[in-house]
Image 1 (cartoon, one colour):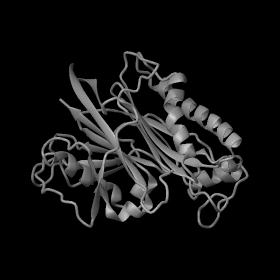
Image 2: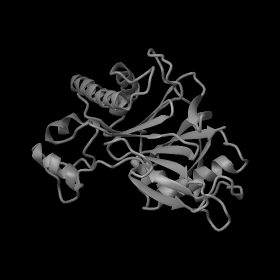
Image 3: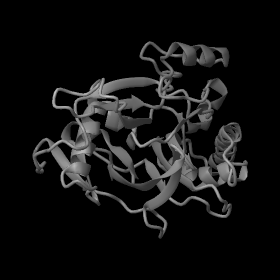
Length: 338
């Protein structure tokens, strides 16, 4: 996918809320369940600072992120997440690098865990820019990192005799540029304020927040994906599943479906981080699949949680009750400018 700007992101909707509105305290009730955020697997604090040029001066951003999970009615949790606010690893450089990801496993957890451990390192070794920002080179490295990860995962799954698969949604922040890559049905949504020229203000003078969908789902039922699957020799059943079994058409692993159309090639696009960007939410399909308007409910919940006291409330996210039975992971990446 070509580099995206505000006018070319995949979907936009206004949410009637604002970061500076007064809100009533949100108590725990039968409609929601409070989940403590799970700390990163590293010993790093989930926080980083980046510098963004603004009108000849510098705009500073602090990035905070963490993830929460609930396996719902599943016997096991098959999903995994990555929170790396400082993601240089063995490839340090002048360009600030942060990385966040969710892997939505199916058929087991092994594919999700493998991708969690190896994808970022593969993207770095494939040439992710570390000194000067090069958008084309960054996208090329991300594509190659996905390819290498899936190739080695398939080798491991063949040796081990397992057939797990995993959808993925990943974010890399390089300096002031945000890169989003996804395969399958995990999603990313950006909360962005409308322009501050006053033209889009609400009746109380506040600025509405847009929920912008940053990803495109890859499912066998969609015409473009169906055509590719059929060309590869696969079939899509009347219920929209590949070989009458698999709903997603792109995923890590799923070696038994690789010869009939399943690929691990992601959509990759980028946008510039601005002071109008509040946070990005990454979520598994179980988080978004409750209703058409659910992404906007999530935006409202997070805006409420992070602004009740005027500052982010650490360690707490709210999962709406209706999606608990599906099982899900939600990862929140919060941008604060100063």
